[in-house]
Length: 444
Figure (cartoon, one colour):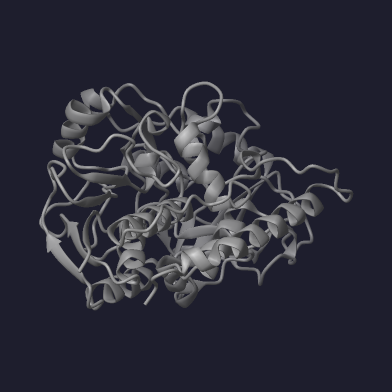
């Protein structure tokens, strides 16, 4: 029987292992938890969500939503788990992170062709087929090995995690339930600010004490999509008001009034007992977070269940190394190596899942003696793979799914941006239909 190894049981690794096993390939999945944890991981479960519990919009006219639809149509394990454990979040797909992880862990551990080995990987094997999905928090030992033997200096950036508060400690006499523009079922808790309250909060935020970074982390490079709130605030007084604290479309039905700024909290679990501060990724010290975030109206007596943390994310100079099937162009030793997840330069949960799908599918096809499948660039999953393998203008930086990386249409579309994205989505799903027979080839 054909076989392969997968390193890492995050979103990308689990997806890769699952897709290979579903095609009759025996998989050995290596995961260093629970023997060893990264600074951001705490649970023994697989596919642990360490940042937000939101997988972003599920509308196909939004790039991440189109990618979700593509993955769901192809039988993604991660998408199956997401829909099975979703919690109310307006037009976004958010999940109960504990149930989400438990669902995936159970599926992986009980698949007859997947064997789990709890062991840290410190180097690539010299032979066989391997999918490396050790994540943006790859252990220092393995990261150093990759740098010394494969990548050279490589690149890195920083990611930040938002705080979570106990729902019962939020003052609902001040805060109110609503979704922006009434989309969804009023799933967000909103904390309104007057100009005076915003001024006080803003000044406290930009002068608050930041957590000390380790010596090797002091060359701070932060990905724009996960910018710490205090860094964002220092860009200008109105930056937050035009970003995560934007008051537009949020009206308190009790007063029928619009606020100067609004902090939104999103449900963290199915029961609604925990909420995270949307857009409040941070690396302030814990005492500073308690002091400053308690200034937000409605959170004066909030019980912080988890404070925000900052951690290093490592990613590869992928256009120099990988093809559009996420395969290393030059094998290490006699091996055939694929990479997947955020270490390839895809940014986001669903993007990581998509890379894991492509890598796992193609690793299985290699093991079975089949030709690689390069997804059409007009699909979102194919556009992400093309970006990773070719890059864009300037330095290679992490990238979320977006319509800017998909080839332009050959005609104008009337009706504005949404109408244009509807055409992009229709074209993508039609292109995906054209390769579905190949996707499902050898599937059990």
